[in-house]
Image (cartoon, rainbow, N blue to C red; front, side):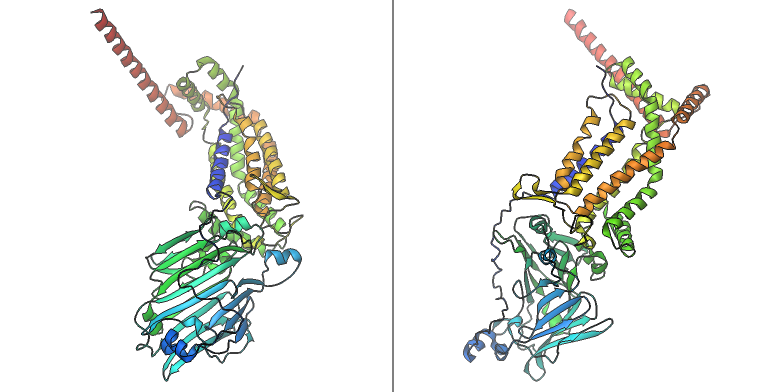
Length: 635
């Protein structure tokens, strides 16, 4: 029975799919989290959470023992102050001079969104988030966030270019005080934060201050498992090095860092809370990412226990910044050096494509197209239009290989199973007719980074969050018109209709491509294997954002249409005539030592000839050795 030829184009496609499959497996740990610590676990010396209940007052002796020189501020009345700008609503409290609550006015949690409630998204509050600022005094450690401050600020609403400062002061004596100042602008998600210890050299020792922040991340999105994979602590070291803790991990983890840091952030899937230093930076840090065992209301508990130079706090250089907002590239890129790395854009080889091409492209189309499904279609059409020359060149190469298929089959029948001879004769044929075997591969290879780029980009694009299209309520998560209560292995508890349609389109594209691709000899029927990978990716992409599945669906459909159009402009008879003309020129020029064909074909021909020559030498040497052995036996 005649064996079907080996399909080079589908070998490249298989390689791409395997790379994507490997990327998915790399980012997908075991679905059952194995936690080593409970959510409620806190760091040693973790401060108590601020609650609305009235604090238990300390008597003077107890306050003096616990707070030393700060005992006078150990009791008081907690008062909240609300400051709003165009994007956020901040609640501050005189107890600790702290940020008590942050609400993002333009966003809603997924559960509220599904119920139709347009409630601002609460990113942090005093139930889930705790901060401490601890200094070392002559009588021991004092947490400045447990003391009462005074302020003259009143609630206000800011707009446009307006700006306000919220000043919390704790007076000890004349020219001795602690001051915390928050600066908020009329729009944006940054809060400038300044801490100043004035005239306290005799009270506060010159030991680094301790800043502690624990945030039990609220469930803001649909898929709890995927959100736990995305929840992590990111940090930027002063040597311009980025790292993270807890990324793509359902288990708990912790790390101690002794290198200086410029900032750290608590990143969720689409939102991020960050602490940024402006001067000396963070000296050391202990980071923890704890996955709760039985609490589905908390994504992860993230903790940062860091040290700040006390000299900055005493000399007016305790200047910091908070960021509470969407993890959107246009918003985070100017927060601090390297802060844009909170938005994951893929591996290094695709990151520039996403950063400089896809992100600006999506932002541009978002400004002119309000329907996000149509936006995806417009972008795919634009990309396919730009890639048309590559697709045309690839189709021409495929047509040439189809024309040469009978001759390649004849060579196979002539040389039999001698693979070296087969390759040598094939390269001779390619050289004679002026065909490069790589001419069809290069266009496909150039498209691979685009396929990989969107694979990493879409799961991290907040622009699709809670944007509906057709039957999908939210393009940033999977669509699930078919779902059930029990989680099944691999597929989970739903079937995404966009993934089903994408799989059908991939199978249709594979079928069409197999019809126009010539058979080639080989031990494996790649045409049959090529049907397996669309089915594999059905399970891979079933829990990915609907926007990504729809992108691949549109891309497959447009590619089929595009190739049908290209096919109508390709005259295979004309191509065959050109190949025959190249063959005649090669024969006429062979006597004058002129070369016809591609440089690659010439190179491969030389390499095969060299390999053949070496093979013959080795066989001759082997024959001489065998002959010598026989002579020795006769003697």
